[in-house]
Length: 84
View 1: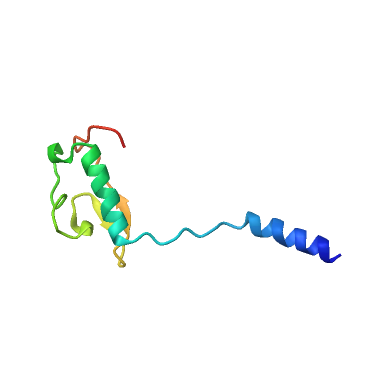
View 2 (view 1 turned 30 degrees about the vertical axis):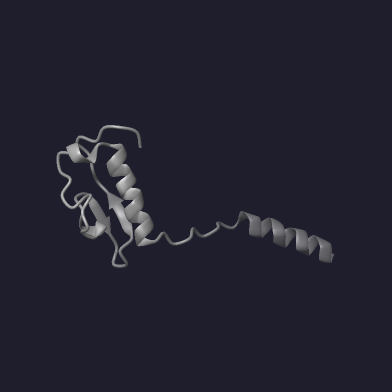
């Protein structure tokens, strides 16, 4: 009986979603800069704030929550060109 309970417990725990680790602001900034560099950011229609020392939450098209985590990225019709 204990063996069945253990197996059931293991099966149920494997079905539970694993929380994603928090992404640091440095990691988010690095990821955004990788996007900028791979899509010719210097030639975007609007690249205000990008590739500067300004906080990434103030960059054109970037929206963050109160903790500074990116929640939305809107760069449509901004002349991005290259692999993502």
